[in-house]
Image (cartoon, rainbow, N blue to C red; front, side, top):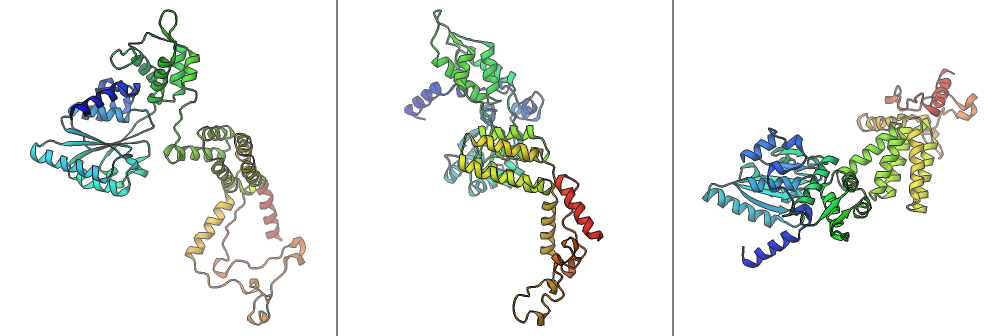
Length: 439
């Protein structure tokens, strides 16, 4: 490192955000994640003993993935290299691999490679790592906000231990805030700051387990608040509310939390819990989800999970989708909420959904030679000579507009696809069909 690089690094370190400046240096300074780094836990022991194998840290933003990697960097005797998948490519990987080979060959020294946002590497980039993780040339530490079982090469996952980090508790966030306010070397301790407990509680609550969001808020409060007559900076609840105006929620439209939220939303409607369904709707709206995407899920649920138990549910859902497209947001939230409340509260039946999937399986697996001749098209000259339409019985000529005759192909005569339930309107359909069969 030359003089200019050293000066630049020193300046960046001083000007770095609070969350980066007060990042723990040792495992014992880390706040939270006791389930994986509590004393005598596997990861704690491995870091202390400097006996790490390849690992992947998986969890929401601000939970300490990079922090743990930095702690390992400060603890290990191995060479520590870092890449960010958003800015690095295959060439960068190859350079690290070359250096790692030289280190292990000439100095018998291992290399730990930390890759932040590893899920952003494409398949070819991840594949380039695989042989060297497998033969021990590098020890991989990956960090990702996405589920590694979906977003990371299966071969890499199988050769790594997955550690899932959890959102920090409110008490843990408050502990971090107080540490930041009193740390004179790297934190805000050189300011004369008085923070109300109410303000700290508010920031800790609204940050939703994201330490970075909480620390950014307290730093903004300290740096932008005018000292009082005694020269003290007072962090009140009003200051706190200005500094973190919107609750930080984990919701990436292409990520794990997106799928978890939409899954909970659909399952709540299916489970007839309108309160939970409305909550997850609000969560998606708050995070800026596309209202058309939400509307499509409501329409699907109205058919798949309500079906003929309440045919109005599909109409309500479709009309809501059209209305939201016409009205837009934010008023569209009201229309979506009405549709969600209706679908969640309606009686449920998946009989139509089961029927079509069962029929599709039979189409795929059972060979049917022909449609019954009497059902075939007879609207052309010569059809009768082929037996098409012959002996067909027109239902409207019979009592109740029903006559018993074969409709399914010979190979499927005894099949039943649609089994109406006793739920809502579908019970009337079931009773009607049973009455016809008796006649």
